[in-house]
Image 1 (cartoon, protein in one colour):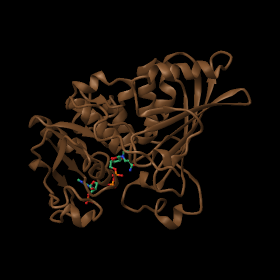
Image 2 (cartoon, rainbow, N blue to C red):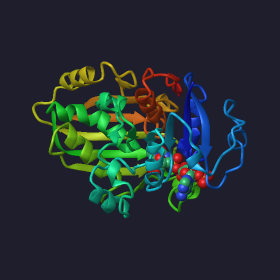
Image 3 (tube, protein in one colour):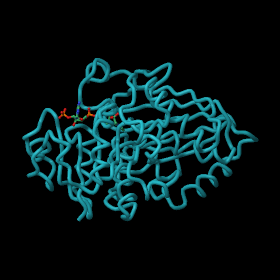
Length: 337
Ligand SMILES: NC(=O)c1ccc[n+]([C@@H]2O[C@H](COP(=O)([O-])OP(=O)(O)OC[C@H]3O[C@@H](n4cnc5c(N)ncnc54)[C@H](OP(=O)(O)O)[C@@H]3O)[C@@H](O)[C@H]2O)c1
């Protein structure tokens, strides 16, 4: 068994990591951390969990003696602990945004703080396996992508790289409220979020620079992206409706064949009819669909923000960097309805 640490184990991604890791055949959770619930057992925080239920939450990330650490911490907290984890030979998958943007000045602009560990920014590998898994296999530090960038990039990057689409790329995204994390906010707690659809994050949501950076590395320069997320009264799930312009006459078969080529070895990306969010719930799958509307291409991309948009993608990355089968522990089915 390889040993895993989960930092931020009481948050939404921490809980999803523990749920999915509890069925992983080669990873054992040996440390789980929390600031506010240190001293409690995992079984008392998550009564639904059977494996790991005796493990006591610790406040001390420095106790990590593990092969891999999953960091499910708020933005700007991971960069304080990553250097010491790496120094101790622990490989890291950071589920937060601290190591996604390569340029420290851009990080400071977007997150409002100077980067505390700029030395590891260049080394960090952006962990979207379907767009480049080889670099992940040899990484020490993986920056797990954001949930919206995962849904958008899986839909757009292969088409952009193949020259089939041009900007602006218009991403109309809908997300469930778990995307905002476990602490209630004035806009995400139930009375505010239920019964309405709320466009937010304009003019520049924090995930937009990440999307630009990834599309520029697929084919520079990145196209203009118009990204408008909406909060919808669901708990889990992201559905993006993506409006692109075809560079030539739109041929749905050409789009399909780029996806088929790009994702031939990527079992977690499914291309087919218009997706439903329950299919993705609790899974590591992203469902893509291309339709012609008035002769123009529209792409739908659906995933679970806590799954392929977060925790299960992190486990997929950990499998790769630990030399395990990429799909290990990640084959659970979604819901039918
Ligand atoms: N939610 C999503 O859909 C999603 C998807 C992709 C990426 N992400 C990113 O993943 C990270 C975790 O997201 P989340 O939604 O799971 O957040 P969350 O529900 O707010 O959980 C945060 C966790 O971090 C711990 N924590 C809070 N403040 C801390 C501090 N100052 N130092 C150390 N630990 C602290 C909390 O523990 P205690 O409160 O018990 O102390 C809790 O376990 C964030 O960076 C987020 O942007 C989230």
